[in-house]
Length: 313
Image (cartoon, rainbow, N blue to C red; front, side, top):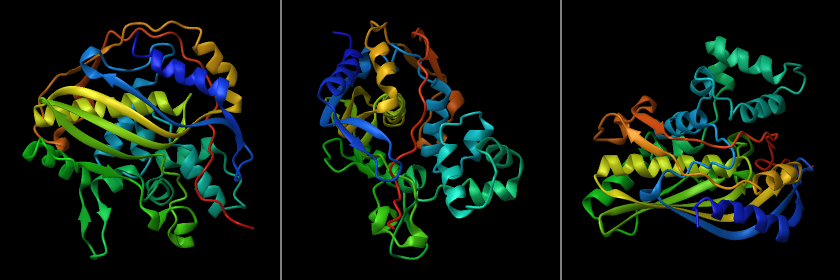
């Protein structure tokens, strides 16, 4: 069986067994199942889905944004990657309820006005910052979780503790102080590195997953992260294992999902690194080439900005 069939089977599972739920903040409905897992042997190709074209540049630049510890969307906007535009714009609207600025105007100001971008392009306490600069109780001290986890598997291949988490309750939902909430819903919240027989694997736990739009990105991103860490550590590629909590199809994605499952997967592409890098900080997007990617055409669907901070009346 082609490894991509696992993803298509997950779509079928949700279409058949999904329970309808309504997001209390937006009123948007989705169909949901809980507790699923798919896994990819990275020695058998790079799992960038072929049954619809996945936006590779978005996967690559977003991952570098995380790895480099950035929190401002200006880097993504400057590289013509707009997958994060909705979230800072939503926060801007919450904090400026009288503003009539459109999302397009907002993003143009992020691109062209440095002062505006510095203030309104920030998404603090999200992945990049928490991976590389986790805040501690000691003022001024942060923890570089990603570098620590990589060093841990190098120094002790038998370790069971090489975990990176983005779930910090201090800044999430109603657990946070009102003036400290991140507003953003951390979705892919924890991953673990493991070495067996000289092969490095990565398992991601994703507590909430938009299976049609988000999950193809997540698969590509964390599979690529696994390969990058293999380059740094010298281990051979093992598996990328994707474990889900709530995995769902939004109601306005049902037709698109049905179209996708009618397509037969094609051979996976390959990843080539054109230079060697000794540390995670040496990696750059231009070091990667995606080879032999031959997907079906894209299937368009609207991003649903749901979840995150909910203000009680």
